[in-house]
Amino acid sequence: MFLKKIYSFLNNPSRKLIYLFNIAQKLNDKKIKVLPKLIERYIRINYGSYIHLNAKIHPSVKFMHINGIVIGEGVLIEENVVIYQQVTLGGKEMGDGMKGNYPTIKKNSIIFSGAKILGDVTIGENSVIGANSVVNKNVPKNSVFAGVPARFIKENSNKLGGS
Image (cartoon, rainbow, N blue to C red):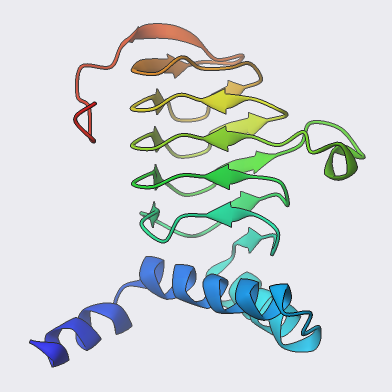
């Protein structure tokens, strides 16, 4: 059983990415400078993703395909969120890092390939963001949003978390 879990971990890039990120973040919080930056660079080179060390990501988040994911410094991602490849979560203008203008992704949401969520917006619980959508306003819980700019499509009846 233990070996099966080790095997699963070693063959799951999403779990490894979250694990490495959590280690780097804990070291960074302890004011250790070099090692977290090396881990951040390792993630960027080996996984093709950039995740700022100040982002807050719940350990249960799943990156289905980790290539091309960009997560800015003020992003907050709650539990059971699923994120696909080429997703960007970040500010929408220079200096947003100082202002804290970054997205919050509430629990049980799904963000499909190529979506861009920009600025101080909240994606509500159990929401779905369609592929290649650009979200620049709040998304209510239990919604499906898609398009450029993203707009309401329908209510999400496939709730992941049961709320």
